[in-house]
Length: 193
Image (cartoon, rainbow, N blue to C red; front, side, top):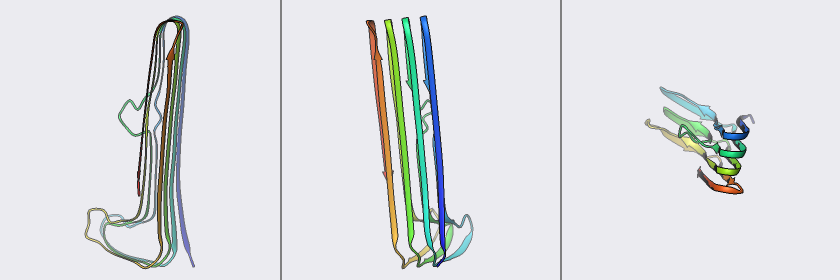
């Protein structure tokens, strides 16, 4: 039989490095990766979707931040933060997305969403204040049949395999010989299937 394979990949990487002898050193980063894949998307309106083929829909995202600041004396700030409040890595995969529709499916529908976010910051000041902040989040959403807000009729006689995986890691280091060292790391991972 026929098959429909859809894959959406998104990768975002950012690196910031600040080095100074005296005074202030600041390195800030922010990466956001979004991917969305739909095997069949009927859009708005009234449709009839007949599917007897196999559908594979995959969405993969990877967002990585690295911020490093080094000072001999003074203040050092390294931050890898979602400044605008957006999630760092979002992957959304739908097998069949519907409006106000009728869907009859007998094929195998396989849906996978995988989101990964990694945030790292290092701030070193031999004499003075050093602060490292790392904040990141990831979200994976996998839906076999997305009926949305409309009035839908869904009949499925085929197999439905739906998986989602979300991983978020935050690492931070702030330190020095004389003075104050501050460090904060936060990571949030959400997975919906």
